[in-house]
Amino acid sequence: MAGPAGGRPHAISRAGALGMVGVSPTSDAGWIRREAAIAGEGGTPYGVGLLAWALATAPEQLEAVLELRPTLASVSFGPYAEPVRRLRAAGILTATQVCSPADLEEAEAAADVDVVVVRGAEGGGHGRDAMGTLPLLQLVLDRTTRPVYAAGGILDHRGLAAVLAAGAAGAWVGTAFLGCVEAAGSAAAKATLFAAEQTGYGRVFDRAQAADWPPEFGGRAVANAFFDEWVGREDEIDDAARARFRAAVADGDFSVAHVYAGQGVAALTGETTAAEVVAGFARALDPPSAG
Ligand SMILES: Cc1cc2nc3c(=O)[nH]c(=O)nc-3n(C[C@H](O)[C@H](O)[C@H](O)COP(=O)(O)O)c2cc1C
Image (cartoon, rainbow, N blue to C red; front, side, top):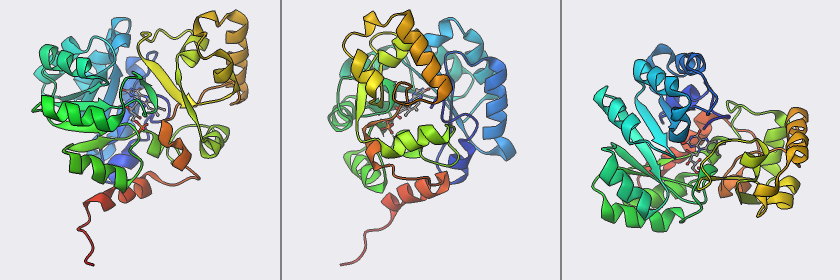
């Protein structure tokens, strides 16, 4: 996850899952190398998540990942076929997130990706607001022979057990890690997460930041007063609103500033550790108890 993950995903990998370094559109190659060095310290496996649309203006992000050779590289949201081809040619395992049956068709036709990640609309951060995780997962499993990971709304061992029972090879999780001590984010941002009940989906926060996300990929974040004010009329967000938003980000005023999170945010109630979250997920693999 761009933002909260930074170099901290090694706490996830050391607990037995695979932590990902989330690369934001503005991260430079030096940032990626530094964060990868922390994530991979002592040979710890890690993945890197690239935003495909951002590579057009930041091609050095892909070059850095090719050099670093992480265990897994994900390239999602935009033209990912050529980056995936280069990563695979370099012997790096690849994944991409699909948010609809049409996305899967494209992935099957255009890119020989190693892992397909089904990303339902419940998920935090960016994606399409197209289909929920479970219907999309079942459709995709019928239409590909590749390993499929499920993403969106998987909060603990019960969600993981459900998608494994459906046929997924694994789960891809964001929101459940947002309350971890290792996650970046101010105390005020985490308090916002722990108090949150509702998320909203849209382009409000992208327009407020003048971010170049393709319009079909909106973001899911904790709903707040600024979101409610502008949702549905994102194109009217003007310089005054952008200035108000920038000031709120600087001041940590989360009635205006954004905190990306999925629908599962309501289950986050207080700080925990990445190791505890991973151990909780691992309960999905426990043998069923007798009686
Ligand atoms: C704060 C946050 C940042 C994210 N950043 C990225 C990102 O940089 N690249 C990416 O491919 N997905 C990103 N995602 C989406 C995740 O990869 C994943 O699809 C999502 O978190 C799964 O749903 P969940 O949040 O319900 O677990 C982000 C998600 C969150 C919550």
